[in-house]
Image (cartoon, rainbow, N blue to C red; front, side, top):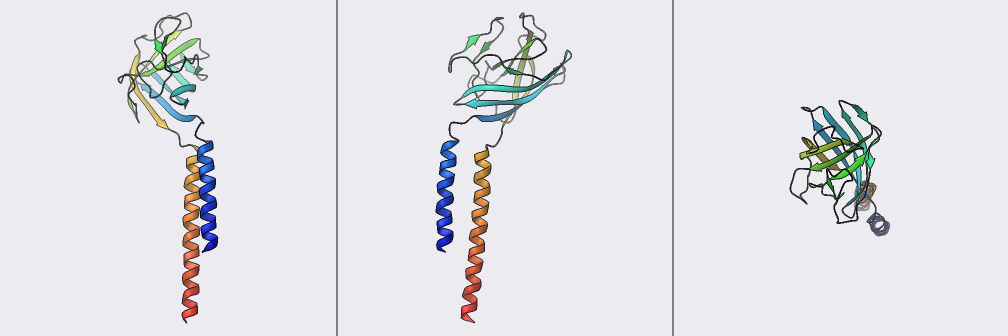
Amino acid sequence: MTLVRASLIAATAALATLASASGASALVYDWSFTDPADGVFGAGAFNEVAGNVTAISGSITTSNGTDNSISLLAVPTPGQAYYTPDGHWVVDNLYPVDVDGFYATGALNSVYNLWSNLPAGATVGTSGSGSLGISDNSGNCLYTCNGVNGTLSITAVPEPAAWALMLVGIGLAGATLRSQSKLARASSRTRA
């Protein structure tokens, strides 16, 4: 019984250390955008730290081809929105995704603004109405700069710490059950 108790204390201390170490790390979200009517599709991931989107990756497919090298073009000062150089979009790179959205670039000489049509500050959740504006680097609209409207889906990717916590919990439950069954067997032997 003492060994199980010591194991539980050690595991709790290890999990507390793991949780505090991962507190400042980036959260990762998967995103996807579909608009079959306009033939625009995209998918990828983005990182969020303290409400600010710090990186985005993925691919966007249009009638012009597939752009596989999407990356964040600019990270505004946290909490401040700004207009893009072409003047088409207001950008804030904040999560939850709102009407200002992310500003990204790709290898096909295109810039992208991915945002939600939900009110500012609203959480998209698993899916919701969304828009994707696409223009070239000169500011000429390739798709309406008011946005190609489709379905935006954003889902959280479980952190490694969450997986570790689940595995340790399952292991501790198994160890506890095993030690209890050993105690029960030993107790029944001494009675016999």
